[in-house]
Length: 353
Length: 246
Image (cartoon, rainbow over all chains, first blue to last red):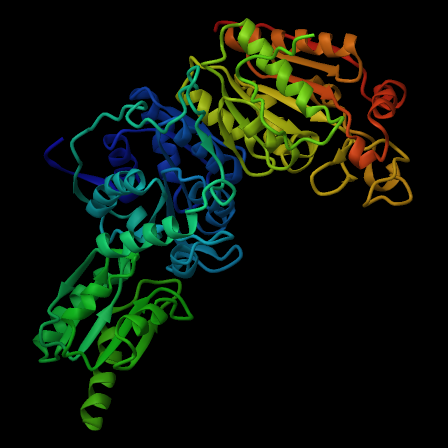
């Protein structure tokens, strides 16, 4: 498909996953990701793949683990509480060096929270939400188009590193309808890699998917290098009007969409304001901060209460300037409110200098 | 006497305790695979704990899954490689406690995989705690005064739990003397034949000795299975169904 069509974010993500060669999906219903599961329930059959509505998220992620070990491009999706249940499986995928893609269509809150928009899973997404010594690549789409593009990239990265890759969507990106150009369909061969399960031939060494702590004396160095390579090669970000900006908004996902407008209106009012949009949440785009030398302050704009991204921004700018948080809950941040906060920060900085 | 074993059994130092039933089960599975010419096709999934040591005791492509999750992992493998035999090899804790939801739903969906459940009435690797299969009155490290069924329930019988729906095959064998060991091999063979014929979920439970955690000599452990364990866990074939319209 080469023309733009109108699609809901969740459905565009599902269709693009199929275009990337995904032929295994297992998940469990939870708002606001359920459209992905529903779409897969009929569409996967049309393309000759496997769709399973699992009895739980635990089972769903473990079915994905099996499919991944057998060579399939495998996907599961969830939100908030269900995403927490998948953490056991994600930790095992990381420890077993298995590629898979897991989507978290974020909703608000800890515990049950609510089905409303939220970006409260940043810590869980970027720190490795399960037990042990691992992290996961995290891609954060900010549009329906990026939902489609990044889900494809997620499968490629998962295989490049033999590692689970997370896509941090949110309720707004998942539910809204926008024009999207779907990627060209690609075929994936389950025998593409020698390491996948296919039966051990006489005289060969069997393929074992287990913790390498037991078996590989070089595992420490291997693991450190793996994440060092991700941090060196996989930082993705977008910069908007940062060349002379004194205040830089830092936002991803749906919050960044509002920040484009805030920058545009702020610039019309003569404010030196810009936007840094992380597309990878891990690795956090440190390289972007090499281009923000005129910044006198950063303001993270996120839909959570505690300012979960602030720590990463402070590290990235080495605490050279103040980093503040503008949070919203139950609603997407409002452009005027962001600009009011921005004006206050810029005035304070002007007084100090 | 010459010791013979299938090529898929490793002649390395095993992690299994002396007198443990795992070694017997591993060998029986390897023999059945050899006889059915499936040795180069089998894709296996292990649980953690004692059974996970099989990863070095056999030479099959193997995933070591999280505790209680080998069944869904096996389902994912089978759906991706439908021409291969796919087996989950798990203990009674994985099968009937932490993995109970997975077990029941494999049965309800009649997923086309083989499950081999090693039932030794205790949690072995963690040092002999009470399991859903522990017998009434049995002393374990978490029921030091003996298991009280009023508190912990009666031993879990899978054939009773599965009586409400049809699965491809459901049987229980023993690993406590030569006749039951030979019989268990036939049960495993039937399970794999039905699995390859696409008849659905094929579960073989094997009553297995754990001398370490029962604090008994191996022969006494086997004798205990015959006299005490089979009272609650009768041997036999409970279901043998053919999938219609496959």
